[in-house]
Length: 209
Image (tube, rainbow, N blue to C red; front, side, top):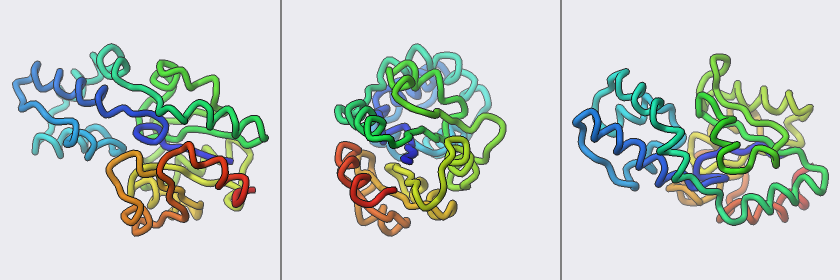
């Protein structure tokens, strides 16, 4: 079984999130941000990310982001070229695949980018789970799909993803499609590192039950 982070692991969401954050900035009179700045907050809870960007936090900023994000953010999110072929190949050889992301609600955006029907499970935090690096969500995803720790890996692009896998007692596969290098992902606990999800098939065939 393979569980995935979503943003910057299966999809390049950097432009969509940048556009949405800057729309909030324009509305609220806040400084605009660069894509590089936004890359540094992808994968952490949005409230924390906004505070990191602007040194402060107001519930009105989050409310505005949520008001516009489906139209503004979704338009700028695209799957990486290898994502869909990789998911289809894994399922064709009997490997279950799922998404477990720090997004509060995951299904709408996964549907919007055309990946929902190629996954066995899509899970966000909702009101049930603590954000990564707490392991609650990925353990629940594994159990929901009938998996076990010996035969499950968690794939992600950040140090938080790798720390989450370690906390769960799960093997973590780091992909360098975000801002973290292979060495940084290893330092955070990665079992293996790859240049992107397109290299996952060989690893799964060789090392994942």
